[in-house]
Amino acid sequence: MKLNIPVHKNEEYPAKVVDLTYKGNGVVKIDDFPVFVPNALPGEEITVRITKVASHFAWGRVMAWQKKSPDRVDVKDKKYIQTGIAPLGHLKYEAQLKFKQHQIAELLAKAHLDEIEVLPTMGMDKPYHYRNKAQVPVKAVRGQLETGFYKRGSHTLVPIEDFYIQDPVIDKTIVVVRDLLRKYHVTPYDERTGKGVIRTVMVRRGYYSHEVMVVLVTNTKRLPMEKQIVDGIVTGVPEVKSIVQNINDKKTNRLLGDKNKTLWGTDEIHDQLLGIDFAISPLSFYQINPQQTERLYQTAIDNAGLDGSQTVIDAYCGIGTISLAVAKHAKQVYGVEIVPAAIDDAKHNARRNGIKNAKFVVGKAEEQFAKWQEDGLKPDVVIVDPPRKGLAESLIEATGKMAPQKVIYVSCNPATLVRDIQRFAEQGYHVTKPIQPVDQFPQTTHVESVTVLERTEE
Image (cartoon, rainbow, N blue to C red):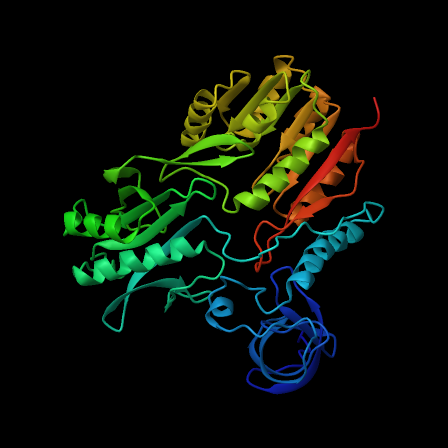
């Protein structure tokens, strides 16, 4: 059967933008055939050139605007859109927050759950310069060592000095490191040949502590001109507390290798979240936007309604961020996480903060839940903060059998959240409060949220 596709590659069509996808691309319909157009906003009238045609949709590029959206922001630097650093950078911030609220509401409506209300998204006063960690690739561009970011869907490095959504001190630190690497002729890694020294520069900065860690990821055991580079970083970055070499000598897409060598200062830096002090090492997972993480987790804790008498389980506990904050308000907390290093960090952070009522175990959340359920553990509250793929059905079933009064679901993916709400309903759990979206990643399409589910039948 021949498909009747109304558009052809390289041809231009007048069109009106009718929607925005969850990835932030404009949608136009040509004879009901959807065309996805980056940098186009709902309500705009455009001339679109077709760049790629598939059987059920096409991609296009804006050639001209006949009418622009009042929500459009002229992005000073096109690099932010090109590289995907700020895919919503061309949309006014108030409209970004509405887009995120609408994303969740739309998915609920599709699942016939429109009775569940979605509150306005909690935004930031300054929705930029918020990232406390940068991992920037290092590449030779026209014979010169450059740091920057890859163009979307490619391995072409776009040199960038101001990353817009990162802590400005981190941006300055990257420039200091880049200039030292240039000065001492350190060669960038070439993934085609497997030769070269420096692969990535990672910088972390504590939001409250202001402590800076610089991690130089190398393809070699030795860092040439190590002493001069270290001295240069110490002089050029007054807040630096830790300089680490991470060795990644494998042909891999992984950013970090397993071996760290502290070249100067301490092995870890510190920062605070909800009044708890966290140690952060090069390999530690730590929330990228501490201001909004505090609001997200505080919302979760407030909704758990703790008075010191409850037993709480924290699935996907990471380095113990939620668990340790909850421990102050609960009788006993149990955390589970699949990454052994994260559990080591969680135990270390519990000891450093003198928290004795939190127990951490390494394991797959769904398997550990089944074990806890068999052991007769009876939690009052279960907090889940899963990865994008959401919860395993077996974890939802084990939760149903343990029968906590409340489940607090911290989600980073509205699609899997909606699916899991439906699965929880089969276990007798229903959403009892409006869902609260939180903007953890301004200028991007990501949306986090907190949902309260309560047991409504015996």
